[in-house]
Length: 397
Image 1: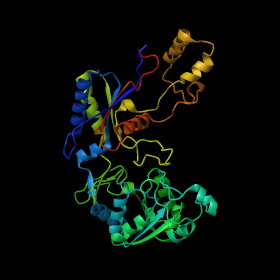
Image 2 (image 1 turned 180 degrees about the vertical axis):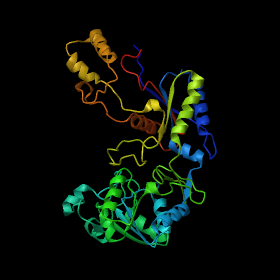
Image 3 (image 1 turned 45 degrees about the vertical axis):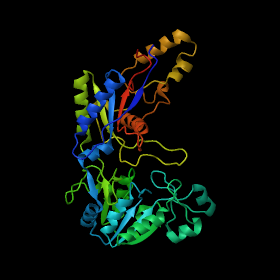
Image 4 (image 1 turned 90 degrees about the vertical axis):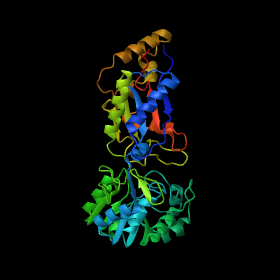
């Protein structure tokens, strides 16, 4: 029996610059890794490259002035509401600055006790102690300060109420911060709202439209086309963007499926094996200490080859060992379980007892999360991840 299952390797690459051929560089880096590490490519190996370097190669950048121009054109300026932004200097501060440059006043509705991805403004226990109901109670900053005082972010030490207020005012607009979880409360202040939530944005837009808002936009509706020569993303707009400089953001990359397919084609032709490929961003997992959910991108993978579509269709080995073959051991148990796995068909195992406890998530979400944990977000210098054996099971020799 082969003793090694899935193997994940971070692959170093040159520093990517605008105009670089990211597919060719990714493929060349993987080929160099094959030679240096001395491992052979196999069918259904997976090559993944982080969205950050794809966007950098595409030159997919925009300035706060580009954002302001699009916001002004789509809202008319005046007083604009911004609903449910995440608490992040990297992810949202420059977006808010661009919005503020376009408006006379910005009314921000912060969700509490935490934002959408788990950054807390206040602990749930403190809400209980003072009798505040986050589902119904709309708080002003004065209300919040009276009940809870100043609470800096656990990891960054930033008081985001003050930070966002100062950022808006420094951009020349008036600022008003509210804390609540009913998006329609913003319509008491303005009929033009940009909903800044990521994964709940469709519900937020629906509620605003039903309540009669004049202008309803999401971050995914801003910079869907180039403004003054800026970058853009037709599917996600500003969603998935990151701070690049003090006045520019790097947008989520475009045309990622084509990038993945080209990487796959180059490496499959070179190796004679079927190599799958994907572009990945944030992983989808939650930090149990800080309570922060990692996924601030709109999707884990914005593009992948067709062989990575779908969900796992796996049997639970411990269920088989404890139940169907509870009376067997040793080689007899190994042979029985192997035969049971080989007998699997293409029929979905969802809902079957023998699959209970396996993870019913998209393969691209699982693999992308594995890649994000492998490459990290610091100075490892491995924006490419190479995975072997992910689709193996107990019967593969």
